[in-house]
Length: 220
Length: 220
Image 1 (tube, each protein chain N blue to C red):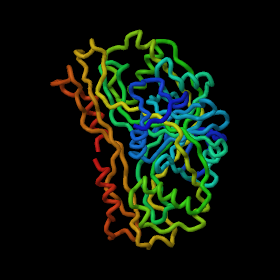
Image 2: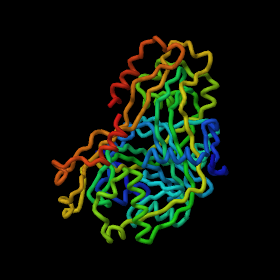
Image 3: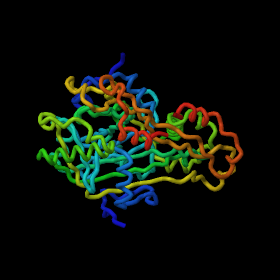
Image 4: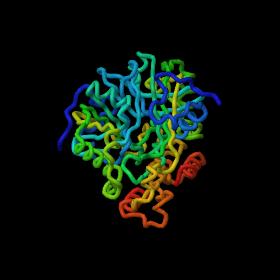
């Protein structure tokens, strides 16, 4: 099992029994989503913004406009951190203290650089799109040169990371199990609903396979 | 319409047409979820962690263990920022550039203080629980004094905030509408599945009304 090294930065302090540094496990959590929370320091305060991402090996691709304040600030410092979480269940216990949620979360730490070469930028955007929806990139119209120029593409190299996973049932105090309180899980899931065609050409067009594949894999 | 004042901190720079500072709209986005992304500065780097929250008026309640590094760091600085986002749809355009997502997101900025008085702590935890699931608090076992002592409860006062909402269809370049590319939306939703009773007392117990109400409101 390949693991990320532990430092003060990524070592999980609370709930160490739920922590893992396993690269494969961390990648599987990253691949189950495409929205990450990236943070930066502005006026001495940490601010977080949601961003779509793509992953390939130990690289994470993000993009925005060339004037994106967060990305430009992170490029200046050269360092970046991103958090991804999937909510899996509400954990309803007999006492307030043991209420919890089941989840899979990852926090990544790494270096960040701007991609300037057009071929590399194109490859990064392909990775980004494939991560969101497999097969989408091939059908769409090619990017115009000026569109590529307007887009700021950055590459994060994951240097270290940690994940936390809770995937068990209710953990109440032994003396509470016979209280007259309903306890259990409510599973939570993010699901896709049936695709809605845009005005224009798609009306009457058959929904392509990559869209239906996505729907089938993500519907409830 | 009551609005948050705009400063360099909360003014939305990119996509201003999607921005709002409306207090009521911002509260409705906060109330539609209960997981926020809080960030802090550690070793000169911004780090984000997901946290459950409750809201009452302009107050946000968070809690953790008394040793929670992020909360303790934020209490030292006295300032806090939190981001909440709901993903509503994939927006699949005819060109890569116009791919997007529909979403509702909020970023809050404010001051933070520790709640030390037991009655206030109890009230904050009630608010927190009610925010996650209405009616849950009343049925559960009262908190033991030592449980309350182990819990760090913090109160954020929202001083300023901004929201960004995208809730429209595909926005392609005029000349692309007749390309042979399927375009449209795939709605995304977070849903609850049927409650699963824990071992012990709940077996054979009727599922209480507050749980079934939650399920009915959150199922697909």
